[in-house]
Amino acid sequence: MKTVRENSKKKAAAKLPDWSYEVAHPDAAPDLAPTVGANLRRLRQKRELSLEKLAKASGVSRAMLGQVELGQSAPTINVLWKIARALDVPFSSLISTNPTTGTKVMRAAQAKKLMSHDGQFGSRALFPFDAARKVEFYELRLAARAVENADAHAPGTTENLVVSAGEVLIETGGERHVLKAGDAIYFEAGTPHAYRNLSDREAVLYLVMTYTEPVG
Image (cartoon, rainbow, N blue to C red):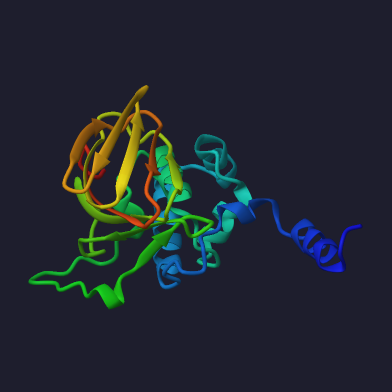
């Protein structure tokens, strides 16, 4: 017999909106939501796309896109990649703020984290959120035995990864490569790819993302 607690959980889950799986884990930086929302609205309108058309092109629900534009929901990393791919812009175009000049120190304690829905995969930009750029630098953290599946990025996009801690399997273009601490890999990211943590501890990777075209 099912317990009352199990039944309650099922009822609660049934009330969740269809797009709830697209919302980032609570550990994601909440102050990014307004920035992402404003950038999404600007880029969508610049391309004369309705929410319906963008939803169809990106595979992200219209409801979620609407919540993001209003700054009411923080999307997952994967959802942001899908949106950036559909808009044909670098990822940083969605998280950038007003440009600044001079030296910028980014304290780890003040990092703006982008997260997966389950919190198993996290990323923080190791560059100022002050402008979209052709080259981006990220710290990635993948929980023990976790897997993160990434959609294809814009054609010509490349990833250069180095493993700092743990043992990771990179799957891309039908190839599988096991990387240990100190190992690096460079590959074309225009096809779906995956990061799989093979170890029983958190894996840490550093990623340089390069785009072929400047921001339009």
